[in-house]
Length: 426
Image 1 (cartoon, rainbow, N blue to C red):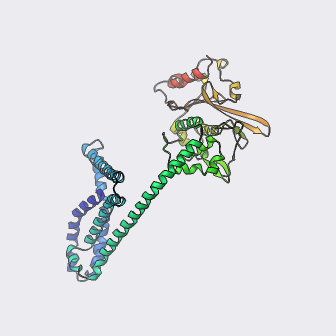
Image 2: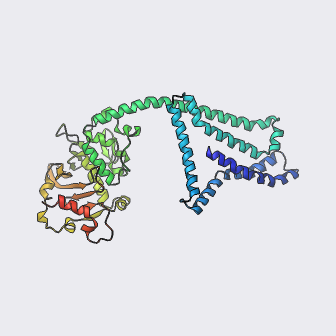
Image 3: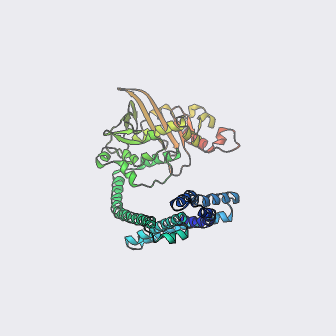
């Protein structure tokens, strides 16, 4: 509605000079009738279109000169925010006060139709001068612009009313279906501890936009039908609810030809779940020649590769990870480290209170190589940054460095404290 008022005000300022400049056409005998209307239309219509742009260009120019801290600019911004809030308030009152559907539909679309009528009236008045309109209203051919305008307004009103009515009816049915499906996914998801830990790890790795995650109907569609959901372990069901939100496409879970894949392509290796323990919500999973200690550990390794290796420069530079070794943070010999190869080979998923992810490279029945990652910090809600240690004792930390410090243990004091607490034997 505000746009219509700005348009009317600008047109009122520009209209008289344009009409004054076009007065000499009345003295030309050949510029009469349709030719005169054509010339006026060619001149007036571009100027009319400029009225959509000029006010905002002027306002932005004035705002740039005065600065955003100016009282005038802040009042102008707040005025627009207030008008939007007023519209939202009227919509919410119309929806929740028990009014009839048609009443609040009219409340929503009244400003659109009034704006259309104002713009259409300005178009008609600008193409023809006021004297010509009064003289030609009695002739039949001058009624067609008004008829077209009224038809467009009526058609627009009917379509919007019907569409909004169908939306309301579908919204009632869809909201119930959404709640039932969400309840089913949460209940059948089982224990969420491992997946919640993975969510915080992804958040501190900048692969999830933000927390908390607001579950939408589109998220529920990604889980798949009941047959697909029941064929997956609990951790895979939970992960399918938000995997499409990840900025790294290689970590997105998808269903291709009845098999689960990471990356959304049938060219990638399918996932095979091992049900060693029927009560395990996050079972060991095989992907190609690699066997992972758990399904969620696949995502941990994919994210670690993105963070520590320059496979995604944008992610690397946004996190600015610091890669180092315990010897640069603590002055103790490796013989006093309690993080040893035996701890790496242990099949447990926890070590010294930290989450551990392990995978093995298997060729038939032979284990050729193994890798491990220990998440010292970054997989809990209270954590502020990410600290990981791999099987080579290489440390990856996203702790913000302390300015004007040169020594690694002084630039990253909290990481150094974690290494002393977790890696070094007491």
